[in-house]
Image (cartoon, rainbow, N blue to C red; front, side, top):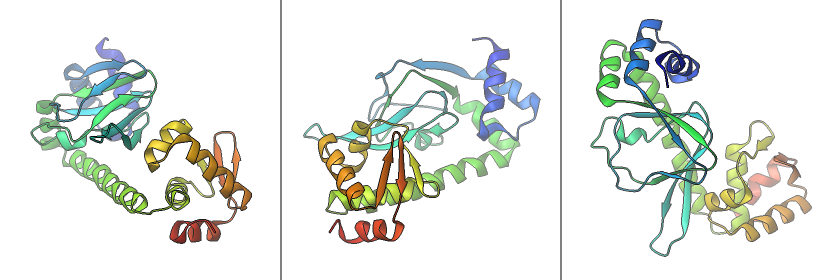
Length: 225
């Protein structure tokens, strides 16, 4: 991919929105563009990864596999989001696997160029720290949700955490959502149906609308009555 196109891509990414054009152009000359086919594994656990990775297009998931072969999805990343931040300033060992849910494009900034950029523009480091802080909070929310015994409680916690206002828009399949909350797709469908019948939620295509927030909070705390 030519440098001009990479400059255009970098200019659209929120993490680089404050950079001057000469910084963007230098970044474009050093960066690489990589593609991942749908279902393709981009990183495997304990593999080496270096530099800053940002998703330009598509959707990818970070996940771990148990010894029994059960998959636990940790994060879903969309366009514009950086991922594998734990390897940016470390030895590059990854704690999980990363695969594409759909055809995806990734911008890779080499570690040397990133270090130069951070040295001359400390604001970049601050933005990376903000992203890492948000990810830490999301991880703690997930740990809290997965510690709940009942599936309806875990599902309620996920909806309450993910919704914008009273609506959660599903950008992933029910199968992937089931992996996030530690359930089978069949059990997830049953829980969604029961919560809908209880008047807590309304399913409208890819949207899950919260009808009774107080009731959903109670479901998170003590399960579905």
